[in-house]
Length: 410
Image (cartoon, rainbow, N blue to C red; front, side):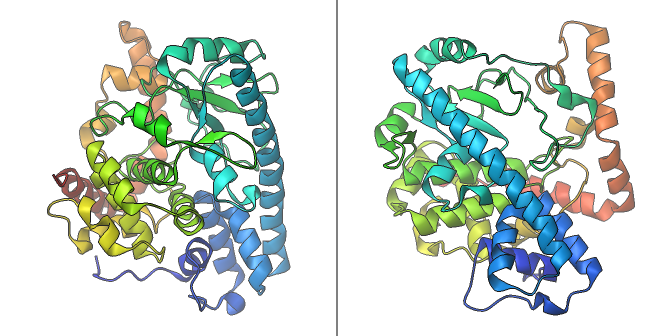
């Protein structure tokens, strides 16, 4: 892997969307139809089509068919965003009337705080944090509005739904200690996930939720409770790193990476981030390495992250070349490839993996076997990709091993 990043022209244009600089990184006015087609595919994979539409409308130089395709994606996402925001407002009002605290997370919080145009940010569901002792009451309150769990249809190997697709619902599997089973409204258009925690079990050493609530603020425009700028950025960063270190049968490793970096860029440019507070919270939560990797990737691609501000969470033995390999293999790439967690994870998943991700009954051999076969069928495209590009798989495995070896700075 070269020591300096040399993104392809399509990525240079997308980086002008994610991290604008004084002069364009590439001249797209002479591109042929093949390059424009690749750009549309890459933008879709990275969930940047709506934001790319806004950018190209402003700078010009794109062919009419390209602008038309991006406009369709933008308008479809605008309609979905309006519906999701109205739904979120109704849910939060219902919980408030019941005396239940709720804090908007992830996309729901980002579009209210750092996106001037919410239609530029794709959202798949609504995430909200609720105190653990109120989670049952919150679920009951939402159920009264007609929300209910539905089977996880995504395990039968279909591609992940894109907001421009026909309106169907994809629901994540239950069994996650981070949040309860997703609930879907009568319209079957969007899922709601009520979180008791924002980190997965084993991810760091636990986020102090009491302090998280103390630092939360009310959005002046809506009155909705959202995380502090520092906690919002921490959540985006360790979620970015989590996604980059493993894959699923639907979006494998790189899907949405640039959209998450856009979240980071919008946050650091729209909010007054207290970097001392951010690094202190990340270290106390045992998430310093994961947060640092997200911020490093963003800075490497042009987002204005002050290097000295994130030095306190720079992991032991980290070097710039390792960070650039992360960017090259997990950010500046699109399309299916083999999951990189481990060979064992790929071919010999545990009962817990089959239960949580593929709806298996962990006590029934037949149910486990059926879940294994569904999982295997879903990964066929990745296996084919690995056979075509075995060296890429070797690079992926080596990168994960090196990242796993990084130690939190104490």
